[in-house]
Amino acid sequence: MQLGMVGLGRMGGNIVRRLMNGGHHAVVYDRDPNVVEALTREGAAGAASLDDLVGKLDAPRAVWVMLPAGQITETTIETLGKLLSPGDVIIDGGNTFWQDDIRRARTLKENNLHYVDVGTSGGIWGYERGYCMMIGGDKQIVDRLDPIFATLAPGIGEIPRTPGRDGRDPRVERGYLHAGPVGAGHFVKMVHNGIEYGLMQAYAEGFDILKNANIDALPSEHRFDLDIADIAEVWRRGSVIPSWLLDLTASALASNATLDTYSGFVEDSGEGRWTINAAIEEAVPAEVLTSALFARFRSRKEHTFAEKILSAMRAGFGGHKEPQQHPDPAQQAAPDHLLKPKAERA
Image 1 (cartoon, one colour):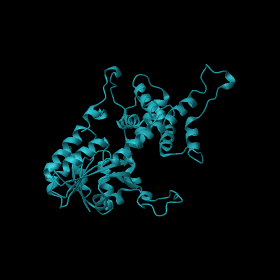
Image 2: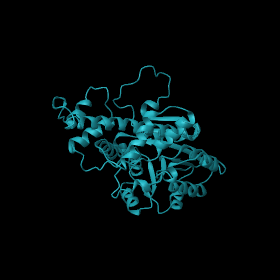
Image 3: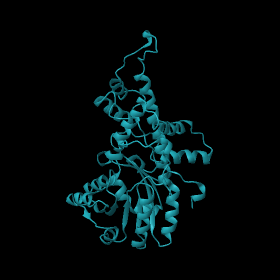
């Protein structure tokens, strides 16, 4: 199958590579011509502009946008909406706010264009491991794109099958889900990332307690000088709290037990805020997820070992890097795309 890809960053480029390895054909565009050139050497067809990309695709076209949430994605989709033809599909695989999906789909439908939102999890390891995808859109269009999703998904692999799933959608066991209409994919991914905040915070706080088990304030007989790297490793094997996040933590601690290459300044990418907003609108208590989000805010004023653990995990799964110069937290405001007051949700 043929796919156009706009945005060749940490995930976009590897999505293209995985698709090409699966026999698909890709036309790629990025504002950086060097990354376009690199992928053309690997077999993709390069495009010099969005117009050029659309011209190199056969109808009905499918264009996947893999850009940061916010104005750059908004502008790109608006431009594509003017270039594409009736029956074509725009796929947003970034971390877009789900209500923006609904608005965009409504606008594109006026020109008989289709829109699919794909919450994509897998980070920088997706090329090897595959991508877990949560998809929103019309069934007919999602089914048309199934060869793309099937190639990107991790497959059943070695994960034990869950008893009692007979008769259910088999795609779910292979790592991708048609969650519902437009917006449902990014809504599910939003909550996924909110949960991720809570899981990461739990690991971070636990390891911070272990690290401080030998402080002078404790009675001498209550102190333990613990090997945190070994604890992380043993928990990976047979305990009830293993996960990929723990794998990444163990790897980081094995390389640098003090994590002194991290300051502990932890960014948030928006989905945690949106998850809490959804909880408020639904009157659902979400104490753990809310606390995890506020812990990230606190990290920008004071840094603990727990925050270094968080930074290490974020670097491990997504290649997220701490800012080189930390801004004054008192002067920080949330980017516009992280805040979605109801009055602005058209």
